[in-house]
Image (cartoon, rainbow, N blue to C red):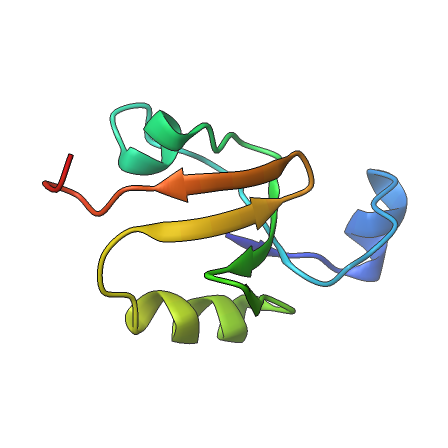
Length: 84
């Protein structure tokens, strides 16, 4: 995950810097299975806003089960590993 700085926002024409930018996705991960890709910006997890990396880490550390993730292309469900 990468913090969206004003410089990154300007370079990549990102209108809203709240969120975290996905820098890489393991192709064999549940995130990839859900449709998350490099360059997506996570805005919410389980309807909780992700404004920065600290928000993301706090939310992810408290997850129990599947996660509803909002990125700019819509909502995706990331399954808990091993619970297909």
